[in-house]
Length: 93
Image 1: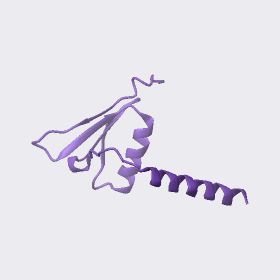
Image 2: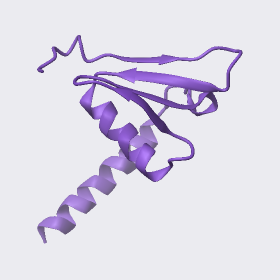
Image 3: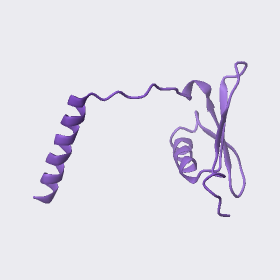
Image 4: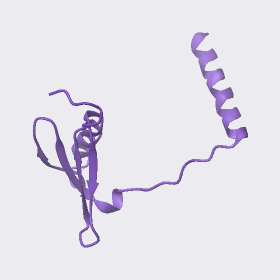
């Protein structure tokens, strides 16, 4: 079944009373990432349900992360640019 981009949702649900979070997704990319985690860490990540278009996973809610945006200085950006130029030049040689 083909889903629109809007329908390819992911919902993370947890509460203060439980130690696990539940993740419901209809996004194939998220499913691939979580399936890999389930395969590599079966004691931590669990596939708890699925149907033809979605999957539901559970894992410790401490694994849900909030991050501040990364601040990149002008100097860091220039160093990264120079490294990419150097790598690309090495590939073509």
